[in-house]
Image 1: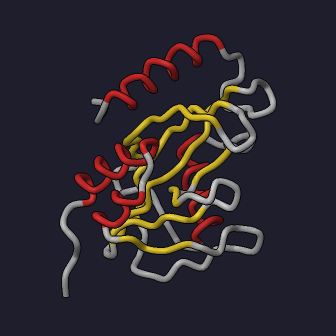
Image 2: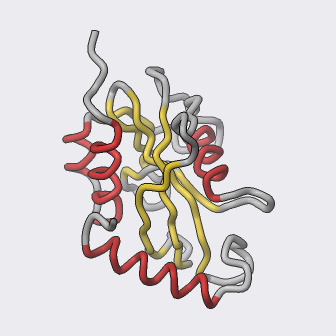
Image 3: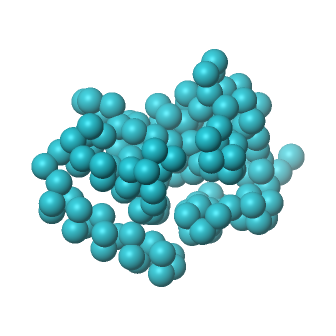
Length: 166
């Protein structure tokens, strides 16, 4: 169930594009392609990174590599961009949001967003990744989120449940 009008429109666009695209997961096949990202949740809230080109706080994510599923890509990208040992919830991958947006390279990303869990650890992104990575309390994350991320944070916060205390 889409969380807002933006996600409702995104779902309709993704479904139409999946009908049109021969290789939707291949970023080289078309300027429009599927990407995967993750809303990282843990005891401190959620993890965001400051995108190097866009200069905005975003969830980790990116292109899907050959042979990967979107769910696999969401975990891989999260580990690379945050340095955290994230994993899908015990029941398996949990898609929670869909967004369609233009990328920094002016491609159209059909972004599938997954909930992933992280232990309570400090982010340690790898070399070549944005080093501006941090945990944010939910209210703070929602306050700095743009329209493309807001709906995903609302859904993730609801699914993550109350913070674990002492």
